[in-house]
Length: 410
Image (cartoon, rainbow, N blue to C red; front, side, top):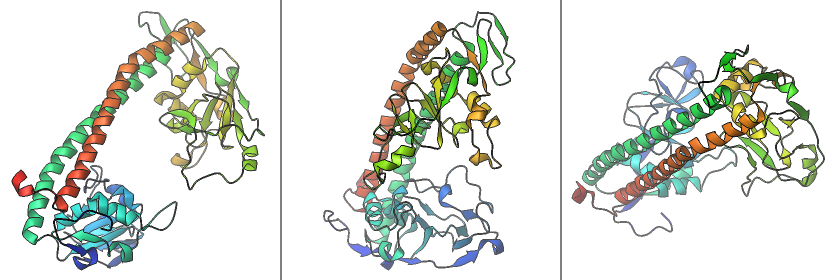
């Protein structure tokens, strides 16, 4: 590839070692298994575990037909590296290029397509900013390593073994992350709804999503604790957004996505430091947080100003629990589940626990103490995953380009 060091293997254009299969089918007339881009894992060359080889997905949509041994490559957002060697005959989204190996071993072709240099070359040629796509006229002209057939099989065998090992390590670390996240959620949920002392007397809250609460706690509607803030006209404040993972954070922009003019910001809502902000369309998923500073948020968000004895730190943790999110869904409106909207009128009627203020402070402090170690372990696991993925990418690149002698590694 242009700008890359000299390879140990000769190179050919991709279109000279594969044949693009151009067989199309109308889904309504074809009940063969359907594979969408959402079914193919990024950077692993595998179908996702949740995939079921039955006629599912966009069954009525035009599709590309594929045969066993064909290699599917996702041309939509190619940087996701969606590659799969077909194990059965079926049909795929038209966002996949279906390549029939001609002068290349199918597994070696898979690894050629997973080579980061190949992905970078394809990605550099895409068109469309929001939904970038690659065109076969460009993809087919990308130069790829072309060792002899026997060596291709040896390399594919080696990479199959190494990828199985590395992917297993990555999967194990991801499972650790999931367990740590679940433990973190459990600590927060238990603390904000049942307090810190399990030996205190409990009573029925009278609220279905809460169940029993400590006897000294009260229950109040959100309308008693917050009022809606709908102030605008301060265009110079910093832009904020609601993230599902981190709550309310400063908004980040890419070089190609800058807001048009400052005058547009006059329509944005003002959120003061300590205000609760949530995304109406995603509140049922936990898209809520507390503003860390004065700033501007989308006009489609709801801003709630605290007016009662519920601390912002405690509210932030309470509002992000799964039980509260489910209660928000119950108060939302919409005929499609993933389009539910929670308006102020629904939010204000939700009943929440109200511990004494000092106990709220103690709960927040205890949660911070108990989750600190979990967060450290999560950061360590995430760092290990990054290193393993880098190792995986480097190994594929070195093997398919002949920079390592895989026969001496076996």
